[in-house]
Image (cartoon, rainbow over all chains, first blue to last red):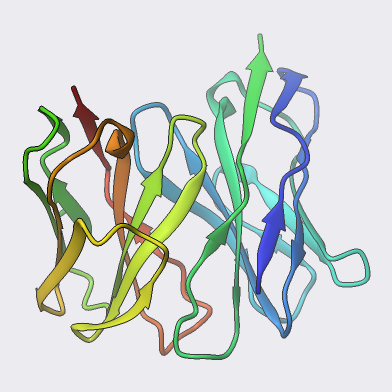
Length: 115
Length: 114
C-alpha cells in the first residue's frame, strides 16, 4: 500500500520569507511524487513532480521540491513567499508499476502568506 | 480549451434523489478518475477507468455507479442520495502508460444534499 503524510495542517509565513511544506511517503517500490495546489473553489493544479534523476526538481510559480530517498521525504520549498501563494497544497504519490497507478494524496497543508 | 471539464459545478438536491455528474477530457488520456473531497479537504479516490474498463473501485457504496461511454468521458451516477454524500467530487485524467505523467483535474462539482 502507498501512503503520504503531510504533518502540518497549517503553515504560516511572512511575505518574502522562504517557505517549506513538508511531505513524507511510504511505498513498496519506486515512487513518483507530485505536488498540487488548490485555490479556493478551484480544482487541483499541478506544480511539479519527481520521477527520476536530479533530486531537486523545479516547478511552476518558483516552487521547487527535494526528493530525499533516505528520509522518504519530498518537501516543497520556495525561496521567497508571495501573498498569492496562499492556498491548500497537496503532496501525492504513485508507484511506478502495476496497472492501477492511482495517485494517493496527503491530507493537505493550508499555506498562509502574511503581508 | 478546458482540458478536463465536469458539469454541473454546483448541485443541490434532496435526500433520496438520483443525480449524475458528467466529466469529459480532451487530452487524449487513457485513464480517468473520480475523487471525493470531504469537508476536511481530504481527497480519496473512488474509481478509475482505463480505456473504458474499471480498474479501481475503492470502498464506495454501490449507490455510486461510474459509466464510461468512451475514453474521453467518465460520468458518475449516484442513486438514493444521502446527507453524507455532500462533498466536492473531482474528475481527473492521466496517461497511465506514462506512469510519471501527472493527472489533470476538473474544477470540481460541489454536491449538497439537503
